[in-house]
Image 1 (cartoon, rainbow, N blue to C red):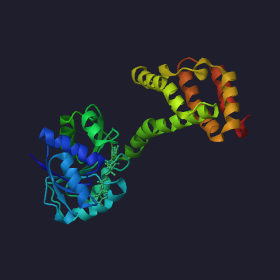
Image 2: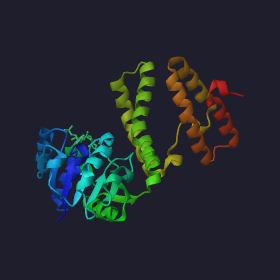
Image 3: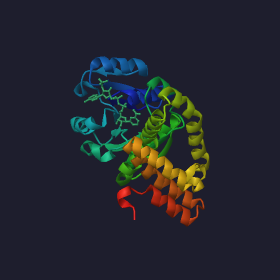
Image 4: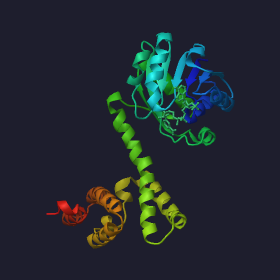
Length: 289
Ligand SMILES: NC(=O)c1ccc[n+]([C@@H]2O[C@H](COP(=O)([O-])OP(=O)(O)OC[C@H]3O[C@@H](n4cnc5c(N)ncnc54)[C@H](OP(=O)(O)O)[C@@H]3O)[C@@H](O)[C@H]2O)c1
């Protein structure tokens, strides 16, 4: 079984390590975190591994995972580089950075492997990671190896090119992080209408979950409902005016996202004339013809 050393066994690192160790995919070797105490605790969670106080004190391994924060990956790669041979493999799991961050580690095979999963709670992630996709890019040998390693713990590999890594990551940011931003905007509008956050969350839960389900099954075009899908420009104008006098940021976001809804509704046979009227209503006051 190949050995895997980990630099940065935090939420993601210790989750993957425990799953790979359990499945017999990698033998977890040395583990180094910022503090030794944290490395000891990570090894306890993984159920294997040797905690090390520094990268220099880590024994050699077939494969290295750098799972520190994104900002530390380049410096750790440079620190690691002199001890690597062309038979070793190094990867990181950042969604934003490509494998080129690891180029100081060459001639070792380098890759990035981004699991599309939120590792908020490692204990939960161990139980729920299977079924997630993992986006891979980098050297062929590393991609082949990681493809097998992630498949063995229930993840579906997909390969992307390094040039597209940033756009790919922006795609996840829209759907995950910005969904959270949308929830916040929604709660602010409810709050302005006299409905407190707890009550609003209760009210939203079924409809938000149902909308997410609809999108997964039907796609965005067929999931769009509401005033824009119905071509109801009067309601849109009334909501916008109300938002404008309550909270300018809410009104601005409503305008921008509304334009995307008009595009979707147009693809679902909204008459051109109605779409044009909605677009005009949603335009910034300064842009109005
Ligand atoms: N969390 C997610 O949902 C998620 C999802 C996909 C991809 N990722 C990617 O996974 C990577 C790790 O994210 P994470 O959320 O697991 O981070 P995290 O929970 O903050 O863990 C980072 C770990 O790195 C250690 N570390 C930081 N600097 C170090 C250094 N110079 N030397 C050695 N260890 C160092 C920290 O040690 P201490 O414990 O001692 O502070 C900590 O254990 C990132 O590249 C991130 O983009 C995360």
